[in-house]
Amino acid sequence: MTEELNAKVVGKQEFAPGNFVLRVAPVGWELPEFKPGQYTVLGLPGSAPRAPFSDAEDPVPDPDKLIRRAYSVASPSPTREYAEFYVAMVRSGALTPRLYALNIGDKVWLGKKFTGLMTLEEVPADANVVLIATGTGLAPYMSMIRTLVLTKGFDRHYAVIHGAKHSWDLGYRSELETMERMTHKLAYLPVISQPSEEHMSWSGATGFVEDAWKSGALEKAWKQRPAPGNTHVFLCGNPMMIQSAFSFLGAEGFKEHSRREAGQIHVEKYW
Image 1: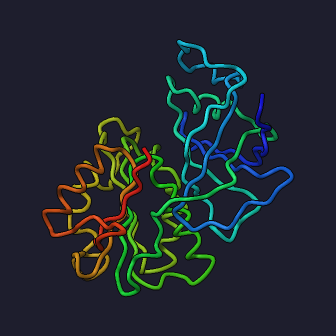
Image 2: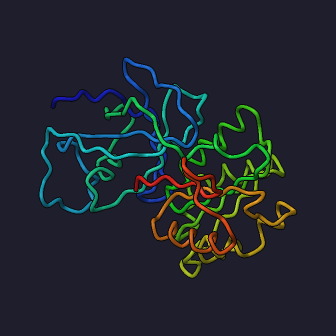
C-alpha cells in the first residue's frame, strides 16, 4: 500500500446496531486546528475486513488502494488529542462496514486537512441559531455545541432539531438532553418518523424535521418566533431533508447563504 495508515482507533461506542462513534488519534503527528463544523477524511484499504453482516461486494475493491470518505468532526475544537466521528453503517457501502469492523488500537487513515464552510463564523453575533439534522448529520453540530460548552458558553439561543426513524437512532440524545438542562439558551427537539415501531411509548415529537419546525415548540422555548431577521439555520443530513427544508424555510423568507450573497441558510454540499 502506497499510503501509511497514520492514525489509530482510541474509542468506539455503539448507539444502536450499526450506528456508532469512532474516536481516532493521530500516530506520530498532531491534529491541526479546526473550526467546529468542519470535516476531514477517513480511509481504509480494500483489504481491511468488513462487518460480518454487511453485504458481499461486487466488484471487490483493490486490496492496496485506500477507500476514502469525508466525515464531519463531532469532537470539540479545543480537544486535539483525537477526532470523533459519528458513522452509520451502510451494509452495501465500501467504507462504513470496514469502519464498523475496527476495534480499539486498529489503524486507520486520517486526513491531515480539516475543511468546510459550515461554521458559526459567518453568523451575525445577534442572530439565534437552529441546527437541523437527520441521522449522522448531527456530527458537526456536536462539535459546535461541545465547543461552546468548553469555551464561551451559549451567547445566544441555539436549537438542535434531530430527525431519525426511531428513538434508538437519536445519537448523542442523552448528552444533548443534559446540555439542555444546563442552560435555557439551548433547545433540543428530537423527532422520530416511525413511532409505531417503538418498544416503549414515545412521548416526543413525531413526523419529520419540518413537523418539528412548524409545531411551535421552538417559538415556545425561545419566547420568540424564528424568522430571517433573527435566526440562521444550518442543514446537514439526508439530501431529501435538505431539499424539503429549503422549501419550507424559503416559504418563510429564509435564503441560502453564500460567499456572493448573504443569507440565513447554511449547508455543506459534500454528500
